[in-house]
Length: 309
Image 1 (cartoon, one colour):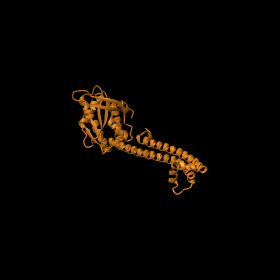
Image 2: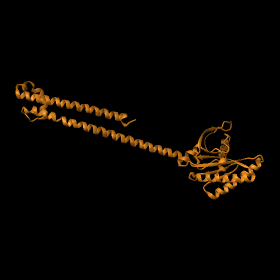
Image 3: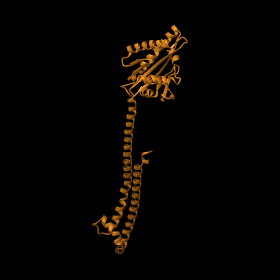
Image 4: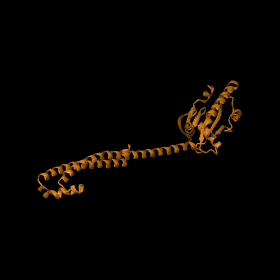
């Protein structure tokens, strides 16, 4: 909507148009009266008796303009004066245009300023949406493809792998928290270091995968989910593990995934490497749980990705 399509703009333009009509009417009035008074002056100069019959009509206006003139030339002078009024009346067109433009510009500047304030507030509110996202978690679970691996061997392998990964991360980064159980969970509030941490995890998993394949003929099948949280003080590790396995129930094994909340914060910080591609919303449907997950896939076949590193 243009600035003149609002009530104030319409009102200003309507009043300006009315004033122009009044000026136009005045100009025609001045021209007419000037012509009439000039004819009247010529008439009374030719026949003074005309003044006796019509003086009451023409003299009052002339006396208002020239109160101290008692000669017959008062009517000629009145005619000239009325004609001269045409020029300031025409100049008033220019003044009306200038005033109209100024008022519209002032209101346009006011609307621009209001729009700018609105955008600033919207931007502040938008940034608040990202500021409240304080931390993230990386949850890793491991499985293996080999007929000789039972649950006991799997637990021992997982424990050994997780322990080795934790040792490496503890040596590289002191700003992360690591929890080991059935899964390995990394928690941090430093999103700027996410790429470094995630990249290190992938490289270490790649090395471990090659060792297991070459020495033991075990094919490693890892699954990773990354999520973000608004609460920086407390992250429920048991809930992270539960949600990780719920996501795996959607046939998401051997994939690297991120949540919509993490992707939102991650891309806000101008990072895209591990943001993931949206694959839709998934929902658990059972008696004990009814959760929905809006997921992004980073690596569709994580084992294959690790083999190429």
